[in-house]
Image (cartoon, rainbow, N blue to C red; front, side, top):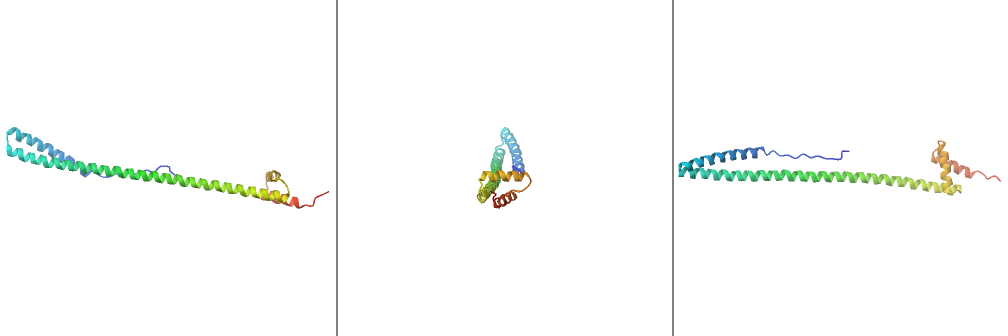
Length: 163
């Protein structure tokens, strides 16, 4: 399973950027016309171009604010997805750890079962658990299973004893 998760967040801000560029270009034109009117001493022209500059300046401030908010939303969205991806990664790691713990529990369960069977066989055969284990290993070396070794040992102990 991959150990990384990538989420790409993007939003089209080209319309806002185009409007902003258009308004900035208009502002430069209006400022140029305002200077011409001021140089010519045209008071009506100065007032008209000053109002246009004011309107376009407000529009530029609004567009800048909208673009900044847009970018903040995109950044926040990326952060939320990044946090979620980190949470998913941590959950996957936790499940993998849980699976490993379950595997270890299974190993302990099998070991406990094996020890119990070894003790029971030793008790039935009137031998020490160590002797039974040695006998099982020798029999297993011949290709017989542990169950077969236990059965053989139990059968041997049932034979009549010779004097």
